[in-house]
Amino acid sequence: MKEKVVVKICRLSTMPGITIREHVDVLYISIEMAIALASVLGNVLVVIVVRINRALRDTTFCFIVSLALADIAVGALVIPLAIIISLGMKTQFYTCLFLACLLLIITQSSILSLLAIAFDRYLRVKIPTRYSIIVTQQRAWVAVCMCWLMSTLTGLVPMFGWHNRDKLQESDRNSTSENIVCQFTAVMRMDYMVYFNFFGWVVLPLTIMIGLYAEIFYVIRKQLNKRAEATSNSSKYYDKELKLAKSLALVVFLFAMCWLPLHIMNCVSYFCPKCYVPKEAMYIGIFMSHVNSAVNPLVYAFRINRFRATLIQIWRGWILCKGSEQSPCNASPPACTEK
Image (cartoon, rainbow, N blue to C red; front, side, top):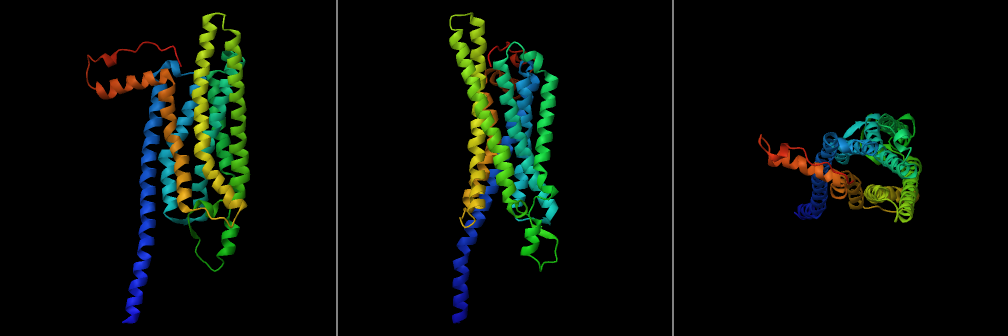
């Protein structure tokens, strides 16, 4: 009788912990699915807006479309994979490693697209008279392809040997199964994530972007002060460049704020193995990195007038006026001259 009471007490004492963990996992999956939906829908709209509005088909928006495609991939591929990995799915080692590498490829494509945008805007204000000759649509799309190629090569580096397979084999010598519980930290080495991925392919590009945007703002301010009493056309040009540069710099700032916490926690885990990083904190870091893909369309909509005008046209034509032949939505909107 006494033993039964003890067993019952033990079961009751363990139930709250299990319930809390299940609630955390369910909440995590629910939020992730909402972020995925917002990322896909928002960035599909970005692509549609650029496709509809010919005025937006300049070189800068080639890179913005590339960034939107990466964000669509985050919602359609990265987040579902992150959920699967969090559930402890069992796979072969290299299958799990390849899934983890896909996450890195898409992340790298985002940051390289942002870097390409920064270089594009820098050339736009530094050499405005020769810009259209040097930076053509064809060269812009070649640059986009190069960004994705570089992202693929750097993201697949672990597949060529920089991984945790040897460590897993040493820790589980008695196991005869080739399958493992697929977790990002189980297959990916932290020295790769910290030194190569974070310092080499996140910190360095962000530092370059900060320097480029600082120079962009300096050049624009200098030109505006110099041309304060000059022709109004040149002042309008640099005013528009300043507005767009601020919007794109905000995209870079949001990227840094959303991704740095997760990388910083990786650094803490690597440089201080005894330090404990709570599971909830890791979830928040993952949320923030994924939320970044959903906020970029909001920045474009609220900060870029031509983008917002086309978005309103789509809303009126496709949703409010769908099926009406005499609808005012069928008429082309007036050309927007502001960015």
